[in-house]
Image 1 (cartoon, rainbow, N blue to C red):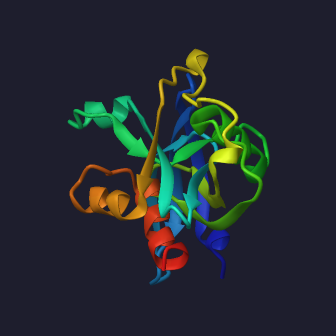
Image 2: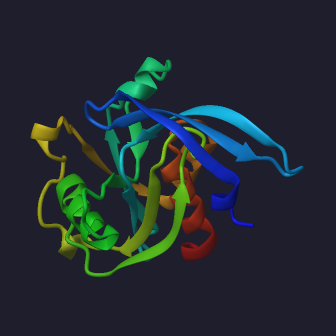
Length: 193
């Protein structure tokens, strides 16, 4: 039996369709013991995205960004977020989109990006799946200042950090973004050995 055999959607109500789609869905779910149970869940569909960690093995550095995130602020985080460059796919292929994000946000035209994994970031409420990439970089790949797209509300600062400093920032709470922590841990385990 597949999960599709265990779910019967009864009703989907649109709660908001402003920037992204927020729905409330009523469905029956067949529990492990065979009983059917009616459940109601809200889900936020903002599409899928991609995240990138540029790294330089010789210099032992990574490139991250710092920017304002209103939802984190609304939840009591009174600082700018330090994150991996990332963006929504907007109907593009993940590799194509992450290359464009690299130029927009960090100002690098990367030669080779490599997908390392995919993950659902908040599967209990958000449909988004992120595609995670790493890419080697050096100074010759710099084609601009980065900073993001002002018309999209982006006001991004580019940070080049030593990998050990970035990992220390995770440990002491200066980096609290999940996608960034995941990519830095990947780098520590697989790239900077």
